[in-house]
Length: 309
Image 1 (cartoon, one colour):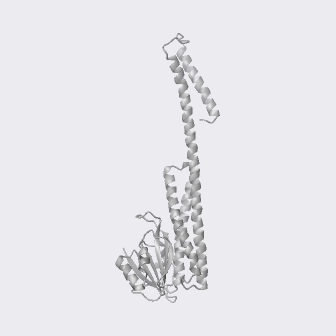
Image 2 (tube, helix red, strand yellow):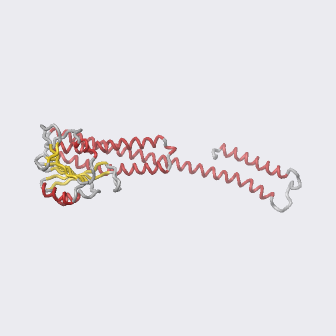
Image 3 (cartoon, one colour):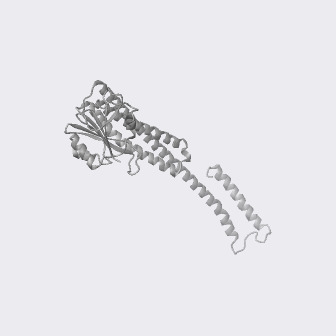
């Protein structure tokens, strides 16, 4: 389902409203637009066609460009993707002279609280709107990281019971976190450049909000890396535990082999078709069995003292 919606609200308006056409101070929300809709947006807002075409690439990396009087900010946000091998989805935010345009190939869960009025925004305050959007993306990462941290700690608590299924799950967590870090780090780089360049008009309040946003984004990156380090430590511990288990099992198998070999040797000796000691004794069989039992008991005691069993 494609969707292009024009949202508008001034500081005097009580609620965010949908308007039928573009005007100064508009927020254009484009979700999975068709080729025709993209052409309409390019024509209506004098956008750079080549850059807009890049937004159609699901694996587009975060960056920003300046072209034709507008600034194009590419970022990625956490998304439970089912068709692509990625844990994040691309988002393009275009800051024009008189508009803000967001273009995404998937729905943006973080923006729902803006659309339904839970979080108030003023579309005519473009810089603040931009910062609020990026703050919502950062908060979405923070929420997802909290969920991943709890899941990782849960597996860590039962480390000795972890099996192949849990290891596969940890690898999945690691992939998600790497995807997030790959999206967050370049995004944070261009976020730090925004206040330094003439990319949008920033007031003192906006600059303070932008600094807080950069700090929050840095904290999210650090949190993701911390969880990654925890997973790496868990995997290292798992490898050590599994190696210890393997060595223990090999030791037990070796001891069992030794214990079984000695009775077999004794039995084979007394099974030879030659004259043997005590072969005419009625207690020969019981003696052989008793000797085997005694030897096995002694060896078992010795191996157990050495913690080989």
